[in-house]
Image 1 (cartoon, rainbow, N blue to C red):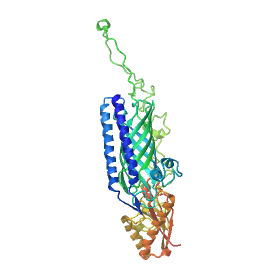
Image 2 (spheres, rainbow, N blue to C red):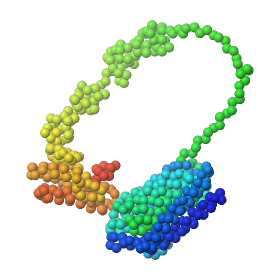
Image 3 (cartoon, one colour):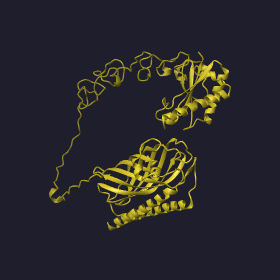
Length: 510
């Protein structure tokens, strides 16, 4: 117990000096000039190196301390936890501009552009009664302040993944219901396009319930060790974890030893004669299992005139072979198309056997639906049943009697035509030049990341880029219509990357 208190005191002292060095470095953070970071002076670099060295000392102390208590069985079992998170990117700027009190009480604390919300998943493992390790994946949906991320002058919206490796020093043993703790470690993450390494230090409170559940409340100061972001930031989280309680093993009752001399009873030997099975009706089915004892039969001892395995007494069609599923009757053919209902994909509509009982040609173009690429829109055989020739290299997503719509994918936050899209767009140019009666409509779309105002802009830009491509190949502007919808009309609600697109519809001028 004394050793544990001694190591915790060392941890507190090291964290104190670490935070003191951090306050020192707040005044020599790299400054922004327009959109570029200037390099810190030699003194700032020395303070940053001292921070890293002190962090290593702190980690060593925690690891050495757990070795001293490794024999203690009162430690956290391995478990996962999940959390909701909040990151404050404007806290330290407010401290430098005014004071800590102002930083906590400033207006717009939860405003987009200075903070963000996210989620986290963590794995916890006890190293001793007073020390834990955790690995944490954090994802935030961030709108960073302008100039906060290196090279970002407007504060773009993005998803920021982060990974932290942390050590936790607890004030009390693991079995305590309420347990404050200190945290230190190392982490890295992507902020926009910048990979940033940082050192988290902080405090937390652990609540341990009898059911094996845990509640974690944490606040961390994440101190930037590289220059990808302008300032340190504050991080807060509320997490929940659960591990299974060990099952209680009931002690086995002790059985007193048996005195074989007293319990050894001699048994009389009884001669057993051959077993005789009675079959009253002589049908080969013993009475004990015969459902019709006095009448010969083959279905569990009962008569079965049609030999379909269903006894006549239960057979709805006793003179016609059938199946048990239909009470001894043949499989029905409801629509009378010669394909029984069990094999008919359209049991209420007449069809043909070649099309699994469904109508042979829905659109009446003379091409069976099973071979028709556009079964709901009539078209000639040379177009595989579609009203127009299917263009290779593209994804056909819709068709009607006089139109066909193709899918053009774009990269995240980009309005540049991808290399895979040039093939289909080139074919569309050829079709438009060959038939002057054809028109196209160009619809731009975006995923639902970030602000909808920005999504409308990027979807408009994508539609305009596609239009400009066709114009550059001599397609008149009067033959094209453009529209943009932001994230309002998703193609796939589960796969966001499919929503970054332009849909091009080729149709005949009416």
